[in-house]
Each structure stands twice: as C-alpha cells, then as structure tokens.
Length: 312
Image (cartoon, rainbow, N blue to C red; front, side):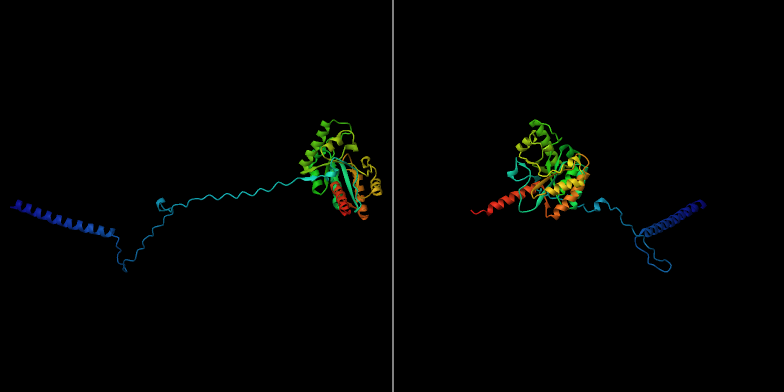
C-alpha cells in the first residue's frame, strides 16, 4: 500500500511541477516580447521619459542614393583673332627722279631747310649725337657701315626710332677699286643689316670717301639707290676744334645744303660740341633741319608747284 501510494504521489507532484514550469516559462516569454516591442511605455513619475538616440545622417550616402553627375561640357575654344595685315616696312627712299642719280644738294628756294648727315656709325658716339638732336628737336641722316650695324644694332634702332633717316655706307669702308661682286657683297649685306636692326629699308647710298669711280657708286645706281654726296664738308674726320667745325658750317649754310659730319671712326667729341652750336645758331637764322629724303621731297614738291603755276 505504501509503495502504490508513493508512486501516485510522485506522479501528482511531477504534474504540479511541470505545470508550474510551463506557467513560469510562458510568463518569461511574454516579458521578453514586451521588452523587445517598439511600443513606448506610458510615462509616469516613476518612469521618466527616455530620449531615443537620433540616428546620425549619412556622411557619405550610398552611391545608389546620389544624383547622377551633370555631364561636363568642355568650354568653347576662344575665337581665332582676325590676323592683322602685315605692316609695310619703313622705307627711306627719295622720289623716282632722284633714283640712280648723284645728289650734292637740293634746290629749294621757298623755305630755309638744311640736312645734317653723319657717316661711319653706329657707334657709342652716335648716342651723343642723338642726345644733341633730341635736345634741339632736330633730325638728321646717318650713313651706316654694315660691320657697325652688326656690332651695335640697338643703337641703329634708336637712330630710326628718334625720327632720323638711315642710309647705306658699305660694309668695310673700302677706298680701292672693287669688282661688282665685291660691291654687291658690301652694299647688299649692309642693306640686310639695316633691315635687321631697324626694320627699315633704305635706297640712300653714300660711297666711302665720296669716291664715285671705284665700283661702289656704279653698283648702287644699278640697284636704284640715290647716291648722296654733300655740299658742305667741315672736315671733322680730322678732328679739328669744335669752333672750327661750327664756323665752317655756319659760314656756308644755304637752303637745301647737305652737311657732311661723322659719328664713327674715332673720338667725335669735337663734332658733338660743334653740332650743339650749329643747330641753335641756324635755327636763330630761320633754318629747319630735315632728313635727306625730306629734303629731296621738298625739292620735288616745289618743282611740281612751280609747274602747276605756269599758264597753260
């Protein structure tokens, strides 16, 4: 009896314990479910409101959330500027009637004009002459050696930039007789260097030493140059005193005269000082200073005016 009773008691006890366990397990599951719920508890004094942490924004949004980039349109190329017409080179040339001719002076009677000319430059002495000309608002004509043009191209450029004319005086300043080939080398190469240094072309030629029969003048006339000589020579090449140079020029000055002076071949301080006297003195007498091309142009204009005034 005792054994049988005991088994029944154990069975009942196991059933009770199992029921209790099921009840406890069910309660625990409900609490877990409630704790995971998104529903917020009703705030009370005992349970203050808990702030929900803000989800930070994406610093770098996923690629699929980005807007597609705008297509990069290349900038239009700049418009091609209209090419400027090539500038005509400056040309120092007399009128057609003086081409291939020998000129000693101009025949001008309606105005008082005179032309100073300087041979054998450009050199450092040329700069001193340019200063005197600029000071007195005068211009002149410079007959340059090709060898010196190659040596001092910037000085030659200043000569033309200041409003002066430039001419051809051969390359080496030979006095002796030359062949046509030598004459062409001496004159043509000098012409090239006149253009290279100044951007100008010249049809003015002065033979070295004023020699007209050694081949240079003949070639120059063949190439359509005006062979420019002079009417006043104070012989400043021998470096006389400045007062003697000035006196020689002032005493023989006439309208249309061409004066021979030098800015190369040695120290030309006497010439510089003489020119500083000659220009203001002649200006006081009513003279104006012009280049050789201007002088010859004035002669041509005067001749044309005279022809126009003749009764027909």
